[in-house]
Image (cartoon, rainbow, N blue to C red):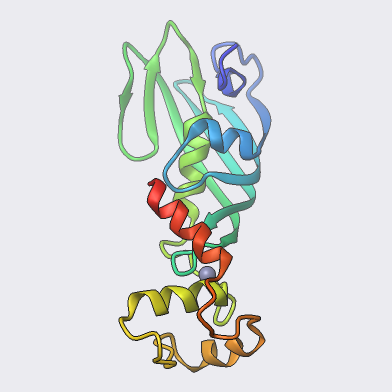
Length: 193
Ligand SMILES: [Zn+2]
């Protein structure tokens, strides 16, 4: 059985006017899908399929959380996911996309794999920017990044503004020459990519 076989919906086999399916998308799912936006999450998807004379209307109710790297400090940031999306499926001779939310699938197959659709609906529901709230970034990381980006390490001015400077107070770093171990980890990550 393939990784995504359980996300196949046999539309042809639906006898009633409507059918429902439930999926829990965990971090294994996101790792398998290997999409660019989301690599980790825990999302519940409730799919309602409504049969009409010529089409199947699939409604995806998506609810959960995903973790993505913060654009500023690279620490994980938790984002809520909550969206409702619709996909209209028609049977035809071959696969085709007809507009944004309508697809044609071969009539002889009569089934649709919703794995990638669910991933896309989640990814599209996320905000463009993923950054921690004011002062919530990993202070040590942003501090080290700032220092690293500037030529003078003596300069204590913080380019991110005063709210960050205040929060630097509870930073355990003493500002000495000792390298923060997390900075080394980051450098390793950057070197490996
Ligand atoms: Zn951050």
